[in-house]
Image 1 (cartoon, protein in one colour):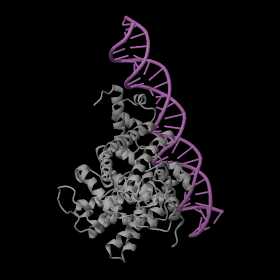
Image 2 (spheres, each protein chain N blue to C red):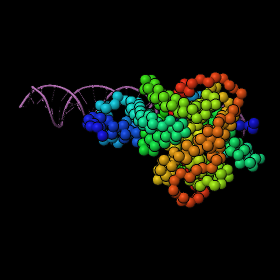
Image 3 (cartoon, each protein chain N blue to C red):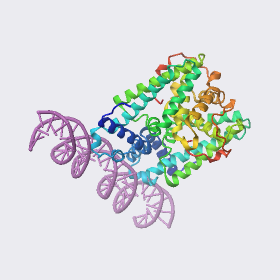
Image 4 (cartoon, chains in turn yellow, cyan, red, brown):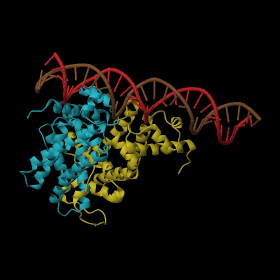
Length: 214
Length: 214
DNA sequence: TTCCCGTTCGGACGCTCGTTCGGACCCGAC
DNA sequence: GTCGGGTCCGAACGAGCGTCCGAACGGGAA
């Protein structure tokens, strides 16, 4: 709610619109002209706010990780039960993704575009996030070896991040249901039977109606 | 082992090198000049084998899905136990990915680049593959609703496909161990304790050494 | 030898790319 | 009024893009 200068507001707008364009066309496929048009700025006017196309991507990714990590800290600080902490972590991750779908896709899909110092900073944030997840998983299953932990961590990230290829709010329901299901799936497995998360009980249509994002 | 004409051999070579370049730079980032150089063909010479850059991507993806589906059919036809079938499916998926890492990345990362008829054909193959997985999951847990099935299917694909962002054979061990672990993780969950897959017992280094592909 | 046809390529086409630069606009301070 | 600095943009730059065309190559058939 704090005051924001005209400059900051416009930069925010530019980053937001750039994320949409990047999500739609990919980093290389999107042109600075596309982005400037979407943001309502002239081509050269964009360069008053941003040094380069790469910096645009960097700023988007940096802000996303910062938000995710901050919100995660806030959510976890009051809870000590490991299983509940994992639930919160997955909720936090999916929640951010669902309410920032363009940024989420940019984060997941343009992960290795940056180079140099930009890449180094983002990599640090990823490492920090990964470490939190791994530590949490180690608490949950102390007998697991580090190799197992590594694979389990990435499997969890795979489940969570892949949703950018298939999740659509109107079709797939609210994200908190999804988070509950995914936590259950990760902790107890599919074989234990999927726990009912929400109230919907629509219909048992065949699975052959699926497409995309295999 | 059958005879292959000079033409077919060269086309295969081109597709293989194109996959490497696409995997490295992304579809939009890679240029026809990059690909022709990698394949040892002149810029215009490439167009004798391929109508366009888009067709290049299409041919790569088509061949991959065909191989995966064919090998899956061959593996599943003799087995009827659902759990064993799922194990084979995951093994097949990860096995193909591990021995075709460039193609795997192209498959996972350039999934929505194609358009028109190209896209339609690839989408059909994906649908077929998705349906096989969903049907198998429904057999495993008949009480699950279709919505759950959909989410579980995509969660499984997420776990499997995400490995293109982190898997390196020399560091992460043989792929069959990974497949065993992942099957166990998906069916029984992380909470049940990770089953030991292989013989390695190297060291328990901290998880903070992780990076990338969050 | 001559011809033909599958294969190959140099060079060019028109276009879009990311970035830059000089100047114009706006508005509060003097 | 006019000055100055923060904000914005039209126009252009060189480079690289995907694609195409016409000619050249090479080896088996006639």
